[in-house]
Image (cartoon, rainbow, N blue to C red; front, top):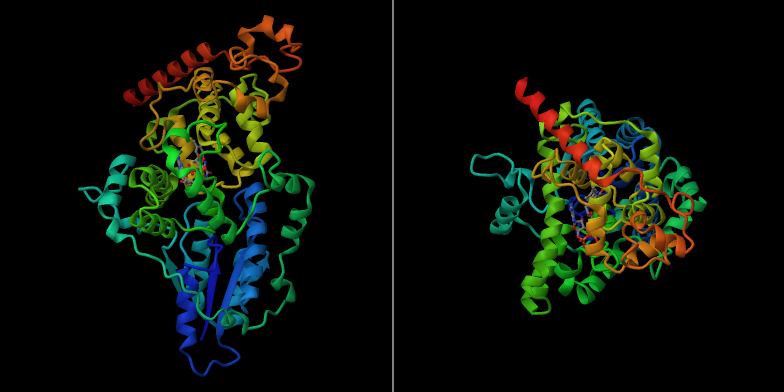
Length: 497
Ligand SMILES: Cc1cc2nc3c(=O)[nH]c(=O)nc-3n(C[C@H](O)[C@H](O)[C@H](O)COP(=O)(O)OP(=O)(O)OC[C@H]3O[C@@H](n4cnc5c(N)ncnc54)[C@H](O)[C@@H]3O)c2cc1C
């Protein structure tokens, strides 16, 4: 019997139940014939991807995984083209009887999973999901009314109270040679597809991977992810809770792309932290603030499973009637980091140049776009999807809806982050701003957060506002008032209807 292990995101060899289940059940077949085996495959459909930076990481990660499995005598097929055609053809040509895959949420995975289900039903193939990218299955954490939690803190508390439900993943890897028994019809499936290969050579892609503002280039893959986790635990975990809000410090784990691609698994991390705490190598009150952040990821995934429409619609229905402005000039200034508000521009340039952005700054740029510039949160989400390595359907939509005020457990509508106050608080000496907005390097720490209020110093330092650096594209006070009025009008119109 042939089993297809359909890989969508879990780009690792260890702790991968879908693969392990296929290997175990195939190993016990004594009479493995030439038509039996396990096909371990990724289907790359260029029309169903998350975004460009994300696809770049994907290309590197697939390459690493293919190398790792080959070194152990197995193989990974990578097919390129229309997903439905390729998937259907593999099932019928290789007489696949069952498909194992790990369940994913959001776009493009939801649609592909539905397509796979339709094909399997037509061809009489069993399709089995594994929920290994979740700490617990989505229906296991419910409130007293048996509904999904809509507020993070009770969700977190319940998860911790029910942590016995978190099942460890088996670390042993079976005989991977079973994945190399069947030969692909097309030798090209044993290499990175043409479009991904081409992507790796593009100048922007190479520059992005260089991660020029960090001490070393981005490292991709399961091994690199583990090294990063170890380094983070060794050097930064103890101070994480204190330092994580300061963008100039590299105080967070920067594991999000690895977690998105499943190079590291949250459950594996949970048990690893437990072991370190039991050994006394890590203290509970140091590990848990970080683990709590990891549970936000879990929360986002549970939300999207339960409310799939929120990928494009506001969770709070009243926000359907919110009026947004479509201003291409403002949107482009925001994308390019040319808004004239230094902390916003620093974040947007960090994103463009490195494929990531500090969490606090993500909140600030999102608040500025949706509340001060009154641009739709979907526009911001789309740009993040395009530029973030870690662009993740669940985390991204939750982040944007939270900031825009229309999500579950959202930041209240009247809470606009004031970028100048935030910048003064979290980047007091302007180090982060100076890294990404070098044209302001000469400014004092007093002037750097709001140069337009210090025009004399700017001139004295040779910075002509509006020429060397933009004047602010929005007046922070007036745009705040305008936002509050818009929300007031929206509330009034929903109360009337
Ligand atoms: C508007 C907006 C959009 C966002 N879009 C994404 C996205 O597309 N992909 C993404 O992974 N994160 C997103 N986040 C959440 C957060 O900014 C990143 O997960 C975090 O910055 C990653 O850095 P880190 O790995 O150093 O995190 P750490 O602080 O080390 O946290 C560890 C892990 O916990 C998870 N995590 C931490 N904070 C959050 C959070 N607020 N929500 C969900 N998970 C979290 C991540 O997987 C992260 O890697 C977004 C936040 C906002 C405000």
